[in-house]
Length: 167
Image (tube, rainbow, N blue to C red; front, side, top):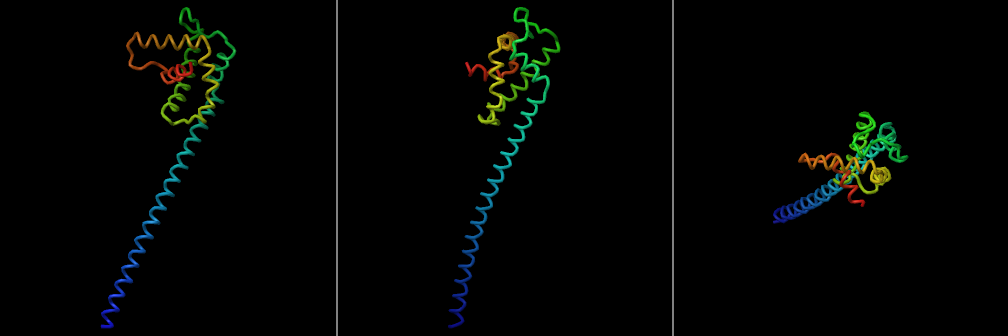
């Protein structure tokens, strides 16, 4: 009888150990999931910061971007709105690359890949783009040509969308 009770207590004790092991493993598993989630968030934050830094470096170091932005700020002649022509083919290419860059920035913002705080870096330049009469004429001309040609995509659509929301 003593052996029987001893075996019964041993089984109960063993059962409690198994329960504690299950509880501990669930707690540790939960902690591991939480730590993995924090690590994932931190990795994403660092990747976003790196991408933003790359955009900023491109903005500051790209001579073409700086040249076009300067022309827009000082109001130099670069586009003839009456004839819809640039002062040179080279200038057209520079302006198109400039607009492609800022369209990409607007695309990132539209898709939640660039937050509002991060986007502040680009707002002044976008305001310059939106307030320059020649740029407005050029963008409108591109949009009308795309619509008249029944193109499925309008060039620089993200920047056009952003500028239309700012009016």
